[in-house]
Length: 353
Image (tube, rainbow, N blue to C red; front, side, top):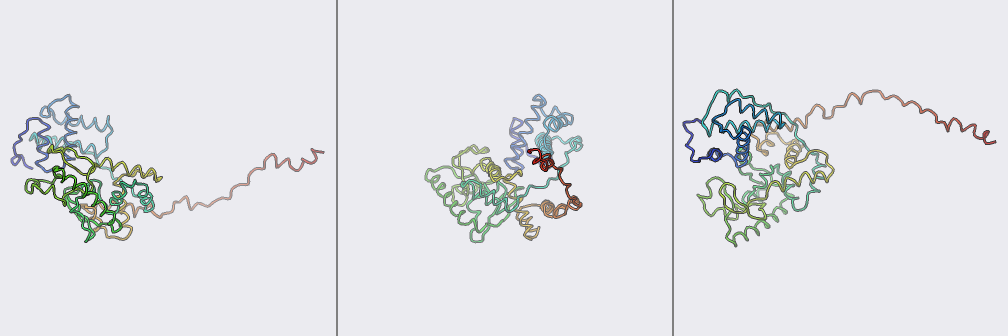
């Protein structure tokens, strides 16, 4: 976005200006929280100096501190740099040559952790009953954790057997399969959610949060059944942007802890998270012969190269290749040396006489 098209900021405080600009650019709440966090740390690291008084030297010193003293990962390093550059370009309106000279950390290529079908079955059998359907849907539809939590009643199409994922990563929508084996349990979950919705309506509570400006365009849409959460939280909470107290979906931390605990209980030594089920979903589809383009569409990847990482798991040079150690000739073990008792055994009768 060019500086000429940047609207003037109304906020006075720097961090409020940062939030205002982020919302103008339609970034997600998570991005807003992350950028505010890193800008605050950057300012505190340099003794609460205003960013206008600092430049390339201070930015590089902060990034060196993160990489050296804090030992952050390259992705975290890059995220902090993006937050600071957004502050200078979009909030302060500063575009200096040193911004293009900052060295960005090289991203690491990681092979995803993938569970076998047997491991997935063992894992799902150890998930508590309260979260079993949720974990099965993560694997059965290849959803991200937040994508599953943000499902609304209108996103379930039992007739066509699909789920509509709204505003996934990158703000993209996509359609995924609805596992036939989960339909009865999902209908029961819909009934439980409807009971919560009915109580909210009877108590005349505010409707659920709606994306963008839909709440202004359709003031009562948040109170309708179709927009209600499939996984509503037990209690109300305050909306961090509007300050309205309403019912949100269940919190990701509560559900995110369940999967690693279930993996430990199942005796799986791999580092397992909720996202591991998505990796396993993609890998098992490719193993079954599903075209990689269809897998890319189901996962919501913009580029097929992102989906190709799962083919590295399937077609690794190590898969099925015997080790040269296995081809070495096996020597017969040398006979064991006789023990002292065996050597003395023939002379025992004479000694006894």
